[in-house]
Image (cartoon, rainbow, N blue to C red; front, side, top):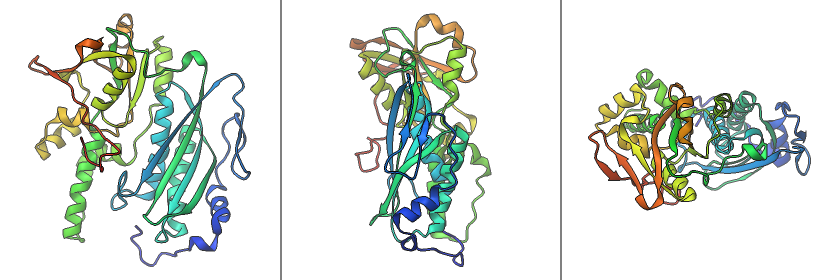
Length: 352
């Protein structure tokens, strides 16, 4: 966890629960007008006046969602915030506040938690959100992080998963698959390290996909981009569990089918090269990998001209009548049933 064995280690027991919270959160500035009272009382006080409040919570557990063998604590803190902000973005809302709760085992000194909170603070500053509360407790099983994100939006701006209609266009932001392949590289290098602890891997040729895994970014820019394009999506979801799984969620909620086109998938060259190196199919990895935190949404057909040339967006398919089901149209123009093989958090950390 900490490479330098001579670094000072301050026991968390010395500070106690409230002392620890005060120590870790004392340098978080307030950035939102809606934050009336943040950390330091029995509860935060927020005021959103006429806007609707959007709330989302995620849990990150050591050994299930992250491995500290290759995930620096500072990166982990940053990513933990991003994971939740992405859900607020998927509602077409603006993230405003977070709460952070952690459970830690006695192998973590204060200095380790300071690293974690430094990453949380960087994310708060970058995304202009306020840390307004949380909790700390002990753990028998390592590090557990629970973050709740709060956002705001006017009622007519909020987008649900359930609004897609027949013959809407499927659109995705950014590129997909990179985070999963970054994880495969890190896992491979971990195994090499376990055999030879003196090995120093050169990961420069994988910098983009590793960053996609260790330090992803939430697409807070898409809300304004769509507003500038005068496009109001009919449904939206973030791609955290894999494109195939998210398409299933969206189509089920909207009661539609879909055709997803293999040749339209936005794939980064580094992702493609790494798939070739690992001798695995890039399409399979792209639609099932997960953790990209891009946004998948549907728009009406008449909005095609508004988004077709935008470098941030890619049209990857269209919805159909529910009775037609969900299909992948291959590069050979073969129509095959689409299967949801993305992340299942209740399947022992294995793909379905």
